[in-house]
Image (cartoon, rainbow, N blue to C red; front, side):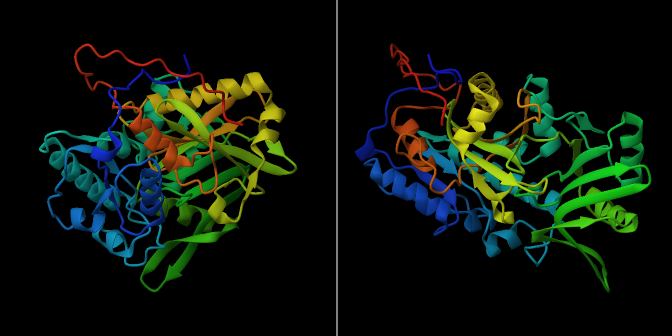
Length: 398
């Protein structure tokens, strides 16, 4: 048996008769990519229900069959409906957006539940947890998935409310280097790598601190900045704390050729399939910040096959914390000793990995294949008398 979740497969989809419905932003590259994968598998073109309509209160009309929830991001009208600030580059507003997003997810859930034969490919509760960093961190930790030790939160509530509290906590726990993350952020938005040494302090972040006539504002930037003036650092952290943060110990990452390296591992139907290695000269490895892809084979050779296989198994375990969701993007780091590893993030929409193939399939093709082969959310009953098919043995991705 391959390493993975419980076998969640039921009867195969009948390609000519099955239409997948996608809740997404029409014309976005995510929706277009999934559409192409479905057509390539012989399925009809997926129906698309616009996030804009859902968030305006329109009751979605679903048909029988799978319903895939895709990202609401990168759409100005949807951003406004989620209650975000008028400037979409502003960091603040995550808690407001998260609450509005959850209401939209619940509207989708109700409509699917009311439609005979319709079922969700990714669970709204799972999605919501993955967009709640303290909650997600606590779920992973409580399941035994290795994660960086958290500070000031038990996974059910946010306890760090200010820079002063954070510094006190860092001193009392003897943690001079931490990551501060906006509780409901994504794509490195509102992430600060904070390090202290006696009276000295440095904050590395992609957030730009701007003082305006009306007060302080934080803007997402493609340039990573360093703040060393403690007044600026305190202002930055206090602004993030006002919207809720998650704080965890800064674990030094594996370094190759002078770059700090981590992985995005996509787990589909309980299997680690697509892997991207990301390298950076700063603590943030997100590729949109100008960082570079690193050869995955070089990472595997650096850590060795045993450590690699253990890390891939951890990614599958992390995704298994969300058993009613087909795919999870897992951000994994190897420690500087090249033996230990930890999961830094789990991503509900972590499948946007252009150009990365597994057995000739892109990330969307892999998901369509799983659906055609009969994947269902954990707990979905199979028809009477139907046996679960044996899984093929899949190697760890290279």
